[in-house]
View 1 (cartoon, rainbow, N blue to C red):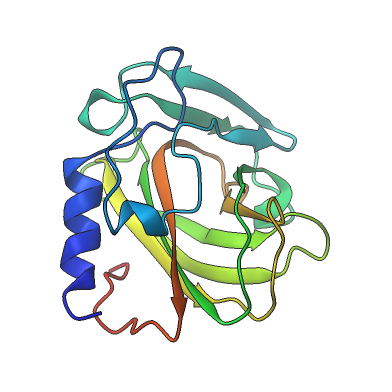
View 2 (cartoon, rainbow, N blue to C red):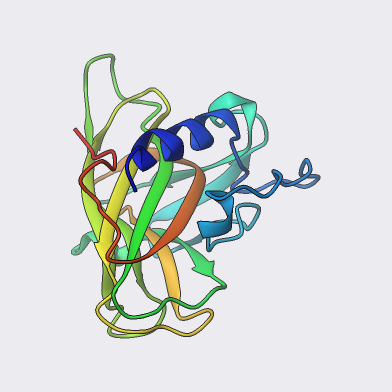
Length: 197
């Protein structure tokens, strides 16, 4: 596990993947790291909830890849009232360590300003939406990767989880880019994984 943080960040930076696209490039070749990825990086984000609109940015994502822009017109009673999800097609075993890296930006934020993201991570895909891995982040007007890590407290079947970003914490515009979700297996050392600042 030593050095895995560098490997993950390097792979994510060197080989960006698509959140949405009409005609995607070929998927990256299989490597040890890619073998741990459990989401389809070419799957689209599903945006939900009231007081929001969304559109695909064809080439405005990180490294000119597509992204999804979500405009939230009113703060929700709960941060999860509006959000974006992506189904995870593979199963997760109990006690597996899950690591998530997602590109986000707040394009209307001023230089030096941050916008609070109260929740990004992985949950069950049906009520009670059991938390598997989560964190909060303060995002800027520049594309950057933000992370979440956690350990599955139970087993989930294929399609039983979803990557999630809660967006109703405030009135704002948020761009969501590529995401990768890794299942690092049981007992993986998380001490060297990157964390949100």
